[in-house]
Length: 466
Ligand SMILES: Cc1cc2nc3c(=O)[nH]c(=O)nc-3n(C[C@H](O)[C@H](O)[C@H](O)COP(=O)(O)O)c2cc1C
Image 1 (cartoon, rainbow, N blue to C red):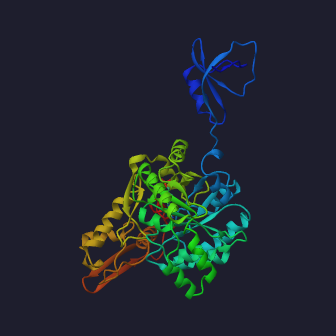
Image 2 (cartoon, rainbow, N blue to C red):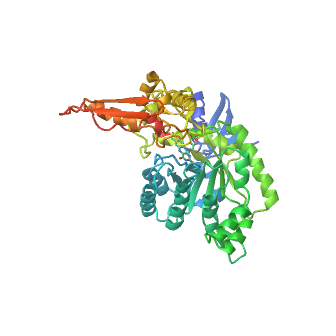
Image 3 (cartoon, rainbow, N blue to C red):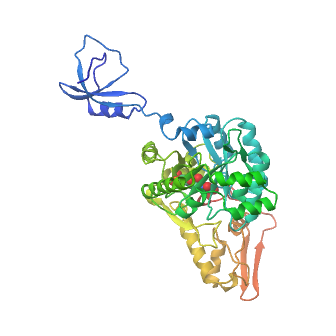
């Protein structure tokens, strides 16, 4: 039976005992004393004059550096196995990526929704600030605008972006395969170097299986034919998986399948093991967790379930560096569990895809759902009854092109912003539509406009932050 004599008396009252055990940086010994159980810091000096106490348990330190896969930390050159995930439209901003990169942590720039020139500017700025520190860029699958995905890959390859967070993929595309294969090199020891690292974020088994396997031969062959990869790279492709890291994303902010992490993570860990046994890759794919991780307890729980690393999203919007407006930050700070809701996604509206958004203080999800219902019901703006048509000036209203089922591209903000500007100048805006003929929009402005208070162009509404 181990006994110990320490200089300081054991922490015995309930609050002090709890505080001691929550102090994860130190090693604590639980001792039985004449008055009950107490905790002593194992690093306290021994004191022979003090009565020895019986040690009944030991609580070892758990520092953040010890959590997660050391291989992940080495591969990405990071201090912790904690990653800040991409958030669209630069919400995961340059400032955020740079601040974390300077601390030796990986963050992925929110490139989705941005035009190539804006992404290029972000690459320049981040590379300049972090010449030898970790950073990543989002490579988002764009089914509607394939050129955006291609252009992003071209930029990343040309500018030497070595890590991408690949997300929203439903299947592998030539672009993601191009990025991965263009970074393959044969090593002198016979191994294969994957210089272009892919962290694939998935929430479905079938998509996970694609990233956990080699690039499909049909896509590899096409890339060789187009001279986008060499014959050697094509041959090396058969020896490595399509990603280095697979982030299993459970119920999360933004695009989500709403799956619970406790079910999804073990299932995809098992899939990784199954496919690794089949393919025998030299370095097995590391599996991380995302979705609903916003506290230390949730982080430890994800690691306890076997995550190699964790990715956070929503919680990062609270930091000063996030490209979220102060108004949105204030709304998010007030939000509780039940204050979010699934709503039609602006970027995949026509496909009926939904995202998880803040409901409280925005009403966005309800309006967006109404807009989607109108989109399904009517073929054109002119078909919508006059009373409903008034809603066209409300937030997020987006029409189909006249006489077609084709939606007009954009976020549906144009009319909202126009109305705000016109009204604040003391003017009026209205629409007149005739079925089969089309719609005419009118604006009337006073000759000497009087700007109302705060008459700046309205900021993008908070709900769009997602
Ligand atoms: C506002 C917002 C925007 C997001 N945009 C993207 C994105 O463009 N690309 C992406 O891969 N993930 C995006 N995500 C997902 C995050 O990177 C992360 O995987 C997710 O938020 C983790 O779940 P959590 O929100 O519960 O922490 C977004 C998340 C939020 C909250």
